[in-house]
Amino acid sequence: MMNATSIIKRNKLLSFVILVYISLLIVRPDIATTALGNSGYYFKEMIMVLPVIFLLTVVIEAWIPKEVIMKGIGKKSGFKGYLLTLALGSVSAGPIYAAFPIAKALLKKGASISNVVIILSAWAVVKVPMLANEVKFLGMEFMVTRWILTVLAIFVMAFVIGKFIKEGELSTDESKAFKIVSEACIGCHICVKAIPELFEMKGTKAVTIASDKLHSYHDRLLHVTEKCPSKAIVYEQ
Ligand code: SF4
Image 1 (cartoon, rainbow, N blue to C red):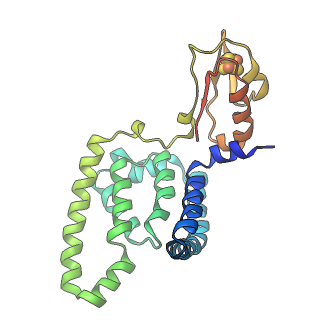
Image 2 (image 1 turned 90 degrees about the horizontal axis):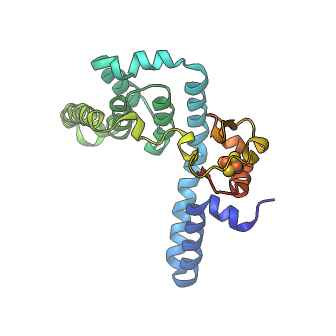
Image 3 (image 1 turned 180 degrees about the horizontal axis):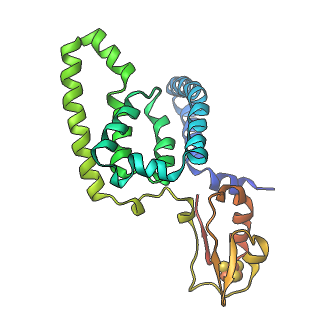
């Protein structure tokens, strides 16, 4: 059974937010009530949008072969990749935060950083439902001019970001938060016996076995991290 401290440790941000709400309710109940109303509104929105998004990420992760994504929107996809991701981002619907899990799934499957930047940017500022509203309120000429300039800016930004940020610098891989500090390991075998699916011995040192299902070992990992006598296991969420 997890105690309160480990629950708080696992959910630091949520615990902090709850603490802020409690403090506000005591000091300024009027602001707290408004804030709770706004949070409720966005929570309802998220509940409606996120199941679809998670379904989409599952489809990307499970059913679309990596080669297809690499060919279509990978590093070597060139300008065709730019156009394809512009189209994908433009036909999207829903708030921009819904795009991030999809962006992560695409990156893991071999999409280039530039193309992910285009999807996110198109999703945020030139998606079709937004353009339709723009025409209604500001006119066709305004919308077309803004669209052209915005798309040019998105392409330039995608190119520049793709030059400066490399895939390895992004923390999309859960296993980055899971490692053994080899120098600290004393080879006691505790971790290997506890979770053989994730640890094995290499000579006198334990090493980690890559897993894309790290979350399913979460509780056992927390336990073994505590048990490691030399605190050699690093596991961060
Ligand atoms: S429990 Fe810690 S010290 Fe023991 S083998 Fe595993 S990593 Fe090394």
